[in-house]
Each structure stands twice: as structure tokens, then as C-alpha cells.
Image (cartoon, rainbow, N blue to C red):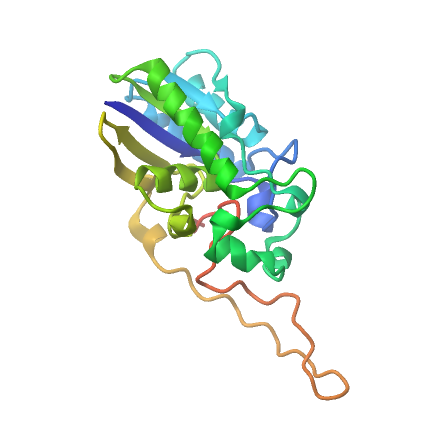
Length: 250
């Protein structure tokens, strides 16, 4: 029974700034993210890993390197299929701005139909297909007795978990993967089992409902009586943050 540990990369400045990093080069871990990577490396030290496979993006490679540095085990293997979803023209934009785009509702409610705009844009369904294919390939390569780790991204992890649970991709926004959290899936000959998800090893404060965002001042009315749109309007609390966000930990 092959056991897969899905590790999301540590926190980055893009996460805290609310920017959708996607495949932007040079997005590295911030101070908190480096501390998270060091902590998860310590937690994983007693777990024998047959392989450490990573997305090609810097934030994942840094996180995977932290895991291997504690083991003196060489470098992680890069698999492009575990890379972030290609968000196309949405890449590098503020989540708060993207939430006003009509396609945001599709991403939230019907993600299997979401295809990100622009020549580099990818369908979320295609992201899931390539990531699941990578997992199946590595499971077959490493064998039924292996435990291995894949360091990847929030939406990729959610897509893999949805597949393991037999969930339609349209339900994957119900899954959470915080920075440097671990999700464990055991693959048997007949079905996968989700052993645990979004585990960051901290206290239970991370499970509490975050406090409501501070209310912005009421928008002034335009001539004619209509209120101007507030550009700082908070996301709907039921919306999933595209890309995974910065997590709830302080």
C-alpha cells in the first residue's frame, strides 16, 4: 500500500500580499515560510521516505530542500506535473481584484469548467489530470511498500485529494491545504484512503473560525444617488482563496 504525503510549500510574500503567484519565477519563502519548512522537516524526520518529488517552482523546491537537508539525502526530484495551475492572465494579480471577475464564480461553483484566460491559461480539470497522473506514475515506480513525499501547491493538493475521495472536481473548493501542511493518502489495490488532511502540527487555534474582516468605511454616493464600489470589499467568507492563500496561522 503506497502512502503519499502531500506537502504544500511554506508561506511566501505573495501569500501574505494576497497575490496569485502561479508560475511567476522567483517567488520564494518568506521568513515565516522558512520557519514552517524547518519545522515540517523536523516533524518528518522519523518517517522513511522512498522519494521526495517536487514542483519545479522555487517555493516548493526550497521547502523540499529543507526536508532533505535534515536527512542529508541529496536533492528532490522535479516533476513538472506537480507544478501550480497555470492561471494565465490572472497570474500576478490581487485575489481581491480577481474576485470581481465574472469567472470567479465559475472557479468557486463549477471549477471543472474553469479555463484561465490568456495563451498560458490552463483548465483546472487539466491541472487535476496531470497531477493525478504524476501520483499514479510515482506510486507504480516506487512500489506498494513505499512512503513518498510530493511538495506542491494548494490547488494541486486539493485536486489530488478530490480524486482520492472520488469527489467531482466541482467539490474541491471544500478542501483546504494551508502552507506547509501535510495531507496523507494511502493507495491500496482497490481504493485510496485519506488518512488525514491539512495537518500543520500546531495547536487547535488554527481550526477556529477567523475573526471577521474589519468593515471598510461606507462608500460615498455618486451623483445620481448610487454608491461607488468599494475596491477593498472583502471576499465572501464562503469563497475559497485561489492558490491556497496564507493560511489561518498568525
